[in-house]
Length: 291
Image 1 (cartoon, rainbow, N blue to C red):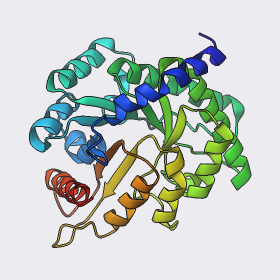
Image 2 (image 1 turned 180 degrees about the horizontal axis):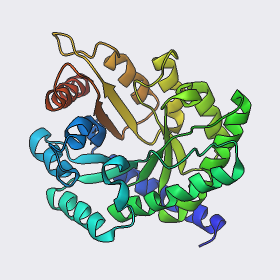
Image 3 (image 1 turned 135 degrees about the vertical axis):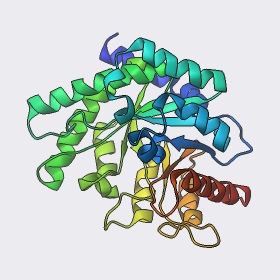
């Protein structure tokens, strides 16, 4: 299928695909998913098998949607037997596979056109894997080099090329604020406007803004958001996250008209990963119930 036809097909299917990915329960202002990075210490430490992630998510936390991280099955992007096992395990539990977070495949905004093209091609396998798993998106990074404007142009070029590849697969390409200029909300919003494709968007993370105002950054990213990451680190005695005012942040998210999944991404060190995930879920549920 050609690029133009692929984009046209994507636009035609976009509304129904988005509704499916975001859930259709209109009584909930948002639904809750779990990002696999929340278990990075357990997985890297051999205490949790990547293939058991969906089971743990459903049985320990009562969460029915997951966000994978490619680092945990880095050599399996083209292994259809392994991917089929992932999908079967999730489907058997009634767990939705929402997206794959992709790292380590090159700079999509590389200053060198050949390396930028190679980075785009390196991501193709993860688009195909995400399609196989039934995901709606791949989360990518917008790393680049050069001046503010040069990086916008270069990142937009790489993202446009990848989004054009992803469109016939019915997949979104979404960018997280993840260091460098991608942690500048205005810069990333500008990149989105330059790409200007319906399947290219953002994944605002409540953290990862460095010195940039996190509330301003999320507000700037929300018009393009196709997923949201509830980053958490520490909690006070009342169960509130101490680095981010979740009530304020979720108001920004919902005021933008977003009603999809909010993904738990616990990254703290004071609580173990299970306790941190549970504390984040409890906070999200409490705020959701108060609306």
